[in-house]
Image 1 (spheres, rainbow, N blue to C red):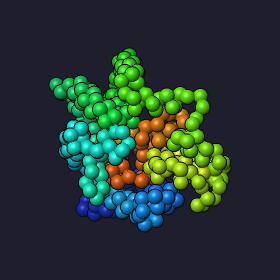
Image 2: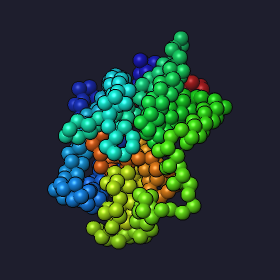
Image 3: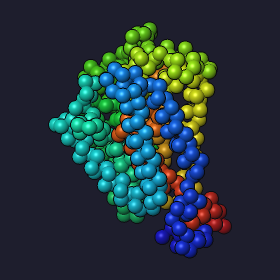
Image 4: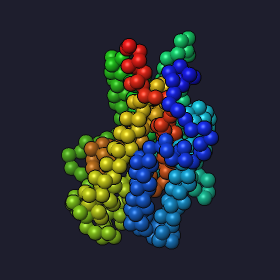
Length: 388
C-alpha cells in the first residue's frame, strides 16, 4: 500500500532471496555482531575455565556451550532478517504471548538457582529465562499497537501498550528482576516518545517510575541491598563490584596479558554479568573501547536507517529494538564500572547465557529485517513532493 500511494523504486523481478537479502541488509552492522560474538568466545576462553574447574566440568565446557548457542543465535538472526515486516510482526506477537504466559507461571514452576530471584525454568539439561524472550516480542507488539493508534478510528493502542507494560513490570518485580523491568519501561518510553508523546506526560511517567523505585527500596531487601552497595562511599573489595573495579584498574590501557588476569578466579559471574571486567583486565582499555564502539555503531546505524522509513510500525518497533539493544549493553558495562547499581544483566552476544544470546539473535534478526532497504524511496523525497 505504501508503494502504491507514494511510489516505489524499481525492483528486480525474480531476484533470488539470498542475493536480495545481502544487497538490502546493513552489512556493517551484521559484521559488528559477528565481531562481538568472536570477542565473546575469546573472553569465554578466559572467564569460564575457572567456573568449569570449580564445578568439576571439562575446562572448555561453558565455551563449547556458548559457541553452540551462539551459532544457533546467529542462524536465527539471519533467518529472521530475511522476513518481511508483516511476518516479523506476526512472529513477534506470537512470541510475546508465549513468553508472557511463561513469565506468569514462573512463581509456580520457576527456580532461583540460589541467586535470590526466581527468573528461570529448569529443564534438567539447561534453563530458560522467559524475560529475555519477552523483550523483543513486547517491542514488536507495542510498535504495532502504537502504529495502529495513529490510524483513523484506530484502537487506543497507546493505552493498551501502557497497561501491558505495567503488568509486565509488576510480574518482573515479583521475581525480583528490576533490571529487565527497567528495560521494558525504557523500551515503551522511547517508542512512545517517537510516536509523539507530549513531554509533560513523559515527565509524569518518569515521576511514577521514581516513586516505584522508592517503594521497591522500602519493600524489597534484595533491591535495597543493591542500592545501598551502590551508594556506599567505600567499595567492599570482597564483593563482585569490588573485584570488577580492581580488575579494570589493573588492566590499564593495554591489559596485563592474555590469560594473566586474576579476576576470573574471584568473580562467580565473570563469564556473564561482569565479562567486561575480564576484558579490561586482560586486554585493557583498547578492547573495551572497541566493544563500546561496536554497540554504538550498530545502534546508531539502525536508527539512521529507521529515520528514512515511512511505515509507523517499522519506525516504532525498530527504534525500540535498537535502543533496547544499546541500552542493555550500556547498563551491563555501567554496572561493571559502578556507574549503575548491580542489575544482573548480560552483555548481548558477549556474555555467556543460552537464553540471552538466543533472544539477542532473535531481536537483532527482527531489527535487521525492519532496517533492510526497501523499494519505497526516502521519506525526505515524499516531504519535498508534498511541499510543492
